[in-house]
Length: 184
Image (cartoon, rainbow, N blue to C red; front, side, top):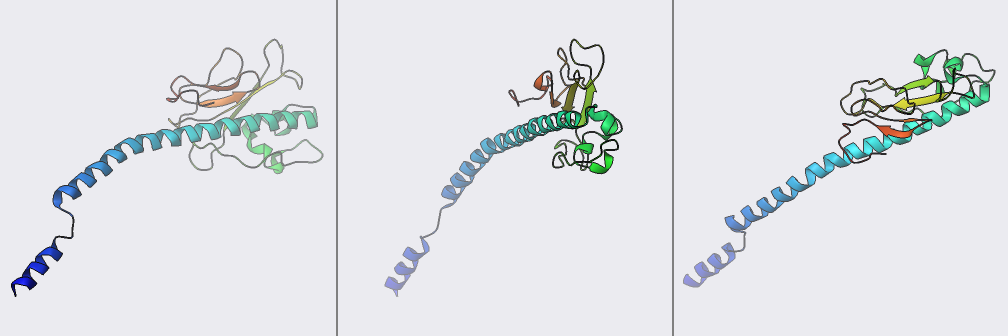
């Protein structure tokens, strides 16, 4: 009987002690405390990278639309209110003989579902009036604060707050409160 009890005691000692479990939990907690802030920053960088690429595509396709029709993109699309969705919705293109899908639909990753990027066209630097050969296009995001900022996209201007966008004069530009190092 004594041998059997010793054998049972030896078998019962095969688990982890409370100290060992606490150490493992503490290590997992420390790793999570390091990883979670990095994950959040990575998500912000990914959204801003997507915004930079999307706005560049919008500008490129707006210039193609202008070139195809020899009038401003806003004119083809019935006004700036229809841009940039006019680039992927041919029904909004009132003037051209052959309405065209210029790009796949893109939505602002910072905006509520279904909301497009902001778009503007202004006279380029050194130009007196807006025309097919003298126009500056700008497209920008709402940024992580979700507030729409106004931006012209011309030299000497920047997007507001934490917005990011592209313009035909400046290239990629971002506001002073983006919160990450050069998201472009």
